[in-house]
Amino acid sequence: MDSTITLFLLQDGLINGSIYALLAVAFVLLFAVTRIIFVAQGDFVAYGGLTFAALQQGSVPGSIWLLAGLGIIAGTLEFLRERRALTRPKVLGILAGDFVFPLTLTGVAILAAPQDMPYLFDMALALTLVVPMGPYIYRICFRPMASASVLVLLIASVGVHWLMIGLGLLFFGAEGYRAAPMFGANFALGPVPVSAQSLLVMGATLALLVGFYLFFGRTLAGKALMATAVNARGASLVGISPSFSGRTAFLMAAFVGAISGILIAPLTTLYYDSGFLIGLKGFVAAIVAGFASFPLAVAGAIAIGIAEAVSAFFASAFKEVIVFSLILPILIWRSIRAPHLEED
Image (cartoon, rainbow, N blue to C red; front, side, top):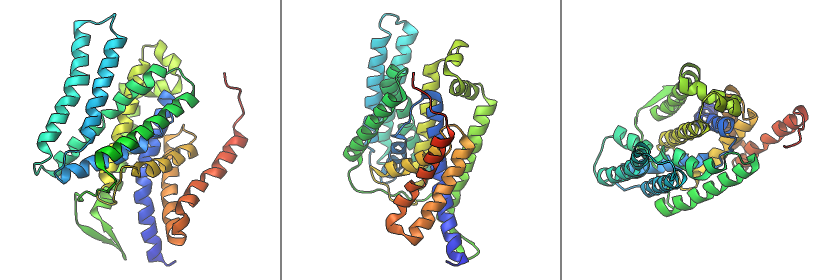
């Protein structure tokens, strides 16, 4: 393996690792705030990329029906939960946030999809259609069982994952989609050609990670999430709503997944179930970080991306096996180092 091949593999590893890093951060955030190992995180990647590609092709994305359905279900459950304490502002808030908002977005998508809209408009619309699914899913599936054990929450997240995959097959079909790149230019980095879209992926990842750092360190909402992650009961005692923290964490996780799907849609063909493997590699990086450290999750994701690229070169048929086998020594090491505590 000469230096040129090494540079090619390093480039592929950094691009893949950048996406895995975002997903790993989302896994750590969700687990720290809500104790949920959200298996369906990768499905936001598939929905974001497929929705964006469908809009670019002039088709109405099927994800609009999932958004509308989630909004109506969440609103109906909210009415039932608050039926004895409903006030006019609460009724108007539920109607606006759970019925009017998703149905308006559905109408906008139906009208805008056949039009030749600008690239950034399609990107923004795809984000607007997919990102609200995160808080809706939390409110429907997880808020009623917020005090359940981690195992029960994990089983629920597996159910959400399989539901999203099944609906993805119904909405988008079995064929793959690929979007046009935002920038078609190519650059030469020594002997290695580098596409502008690849630079966009890595630049956007870096910008999002810096944005997360500033959000958690400089904003009141970010500090509230960190407080919930450190001690959920203590945070609730000082007035930080667990429901608000859960909705915000799922909103951020859905945004990370959707923007990741939009960024990689021009680089690879996405299918309705593509998010599973992508999310699983972010999950491995989160395990490397012990679901506790954002910097370690990013470092683990970059290492996994590079390991995947090298494995694909030397043993492409076994690259997935090699990548997922990397988790075994980490689990063994953590099982030896971590004290075993009886579950309450």
